[in-house]
Length: 315
Length: 257
Image (cartoon, rainbow over all chains, first blue to last red; front, side, top):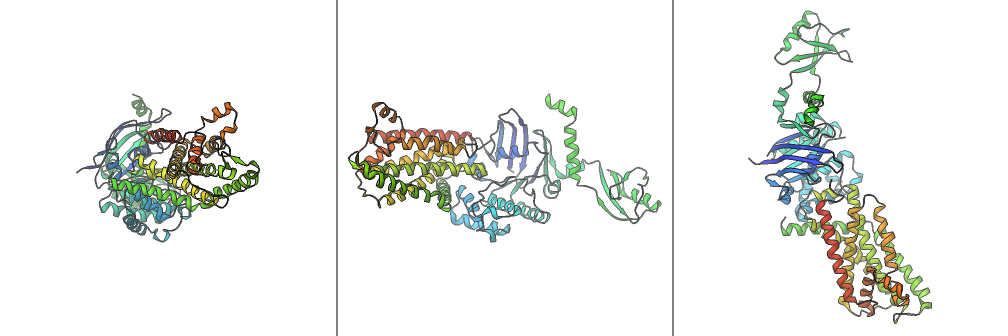
């Protein structure tokens, strides 16, 4: 199967000498739902900017569905839809005009462009706003407008840079559902996000980037299996004054007085419950403490920032 | 990109540009009409009647071609510089950059947009001038050709200005400090025969003098310079500015990081 995106030895050095990308390699398979994660300034937006022709690369190769952006840029662009992080449409233009104009840039005649615009504006709940100038839309509507605009030419690869930033939970969930449906219909999706819960819920493969290098590029399941422990929060029937001693487990009380227990891989939760039962503590509910991917992400980025890792970077 | 797709993309850019200046017509179409009407009344009627004959014609007839050309030049330039810089400023230029539209289509689209406004204003000013004087065309092909290539040239100038501009001040500097003085000193209101020899020589390095005179030749049949030399120079400048614009687009000057 052709890869939707292939990146080889990608380097970006800005005019002030700052090296944002230090030779990254990345492959995204056709049909994948892929997350590119990293802290601010890690190189996510630069990478996607190069793929979308918004940033000039310093070295390396980028291919979109086999089309090299150095030699077949037009073919590569025809397969790409882009949803940037910042609003980048003319605020004075009407919603419908913004979407049909974008279709026109891809050579789609107005009649067909209008049909496609209607389809996506309806799917994204913006059809009623089609004659409204973009500046009059709410933040969430503007985000959806950018998605409709990116899809109007039916790209095979959709790139979303922080698509749900600043969007309320309800709308975020509805956008997830929409994106999952697009992916089911065959669109390859690459997203960057600060909401790791989003990546964990949506994506099958994940790359973690920091300081211009790919730290990990693997399947979500493989990545999550690397977690050596999981943290559970237990709500007890009676409030606890101090955390009970649990043989083989580390436990403490959180700020709200709930019992927090770390369970290592291979350990059984039964051991926790048996010991709590013996101490007369009754558990009424239980949940995992935090997003698992978030824990792993923080750990990887912290490891990458250790003096040893930085020495390796200079070498 | 296929030829028919490129044509669609070109039409899309032009339509968008025309829609933009029509949407804000009180800022784009009305002011030149008002300004030129004042020129006709004050310079043509009130002062012109005391000046008498200029270049063999009454003063009103003499200044009309220059004023039409002046409005074409400023409107063509202003349309492209403000539209393209606004796109840079709002980052909506990224809509074009991520699409497969070739650079020469982007340039052609913006230049056509600038020409649409410039020529539209030229037509409005011409119609207004008919209320003050009679216009007889001496050489129609020269009139059409001159006004088209001049509009194209200044649209290209506006495009380069917008590419280089980093703030709104930068898009008003050239029109205010370069374009306006050159236009006023380009023989719109006088024949350079009136100037002493030295200043006649200085005037000859002003490119706008050639455009105004080529256009005046087309309408009145009189010119301070050879109109065919003027046309040749405009075409040469168009070739140079087109090459510069395409080079800037290819390098992403001011629009790509």
